[in-house]
Amino acid sequence: MAINYKQFVEKVSTLAILLSVVFLALEVSQSNQLAKSTIRQALNVSDMELWKIMLEEDVIAKSLFKIDNNLKLTKYEEYQVELFQTVNFRDYDNSFYHYSNGLFEEDVWLMYRKGIKQLLLRDLSARKMWEKHNSEFSNEFQIEVNKIINELKVELNEIID
Image (cartoon, rainbow, N blue to C red; front, side):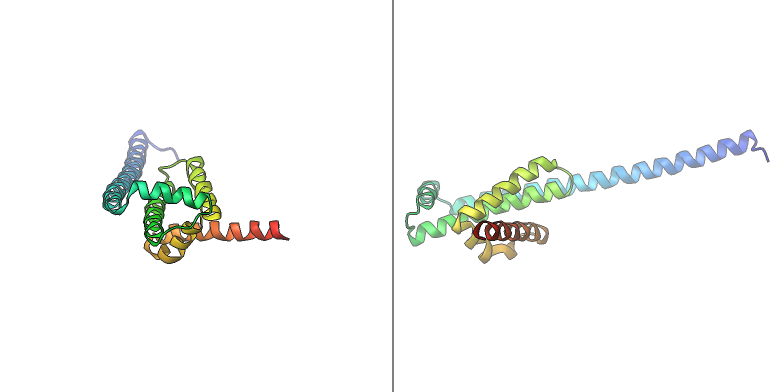
């Protein structure tokens, strides 16, 4: 059975309309994702500004030097480093959010992930902060950091064995 010209045009038109609707839906989805990401970034910047009010850069710099050289911290220095690590991990959480939503390339996230792993490996204050405050971060980021911690445990056990 041959399709006449009118039926052909109707089918092509219908297909064009369907493709337009699909394209429009994808555009709206991407626009929503970008809007969410923009809002998340703005909130993160606002949060960081509030946290920075409590941080004393000079104390943090000296405290990090002490940590790197296995020197004892005062209670206030411990407090400042805990705040600093919280801010640091909030930035990591924000970066993970953007990576998870396809706005960061994988190699960029892997660089951040490597930094988190090294930080947790060498800095007791980062591990203490995570144990104390992990519930204050997004669920997805908690899962990712806990994976990193488990990887470290496996790697350290292999070194000891």
